[in-house]
Amino acid sequence: DIMPLTPTRVQRIAPKALYFDGIDDYVSIPDFIIEPGNEITIEALVMPISFDDFRGIVSKYIDASNRIAVAFGSDKKVRFGWNIGNAGWDVIQSDPLTEYAWYLIDATAKIRTMKLYVNSSLVANGEHKFVDFNWNAFTTDIWVGKYVIPYPCHHGYFALVRKYNRAL
Image 1: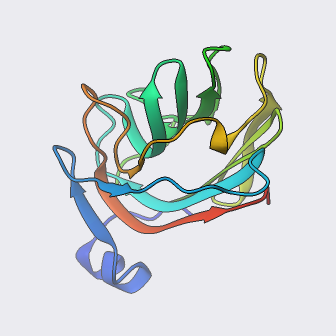
Image 2: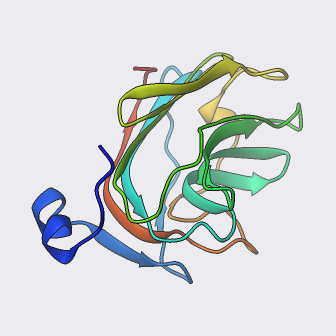
């Protein structure tokens, strides 16, 4: 369900939600190995306040040749995709979302299969055109609430971020 933001509702739905100011708030987590490295589910309960640029939800980024990202775009769509070893960037995306609403975002990868869920409904899926998913292909910190400079950080709330070592 899409729910409008009110202080009471934030406290009732996600009393420990973290507010990100859209300027420089993000969380950096040291990289980790997952087994098997060719599948993952990234889950986030998030409330965007603005979509004025490409804003990361969860990303692992060295450069354009080595990146994995779940992010909001200025068109209000959430995206999930990767490029590993400069093989080629491919992405799936949702329909436009709205500000001030809670969304449960689930992005899954298994080999080349990409799936994106919003509020438990499958909104996009496909086969990556260029390369198999491999979390362990490169090492760098994982960012929550950030994609990469010069893009701004996430503006809104995070109530939950989880990673599963399998495609759910």
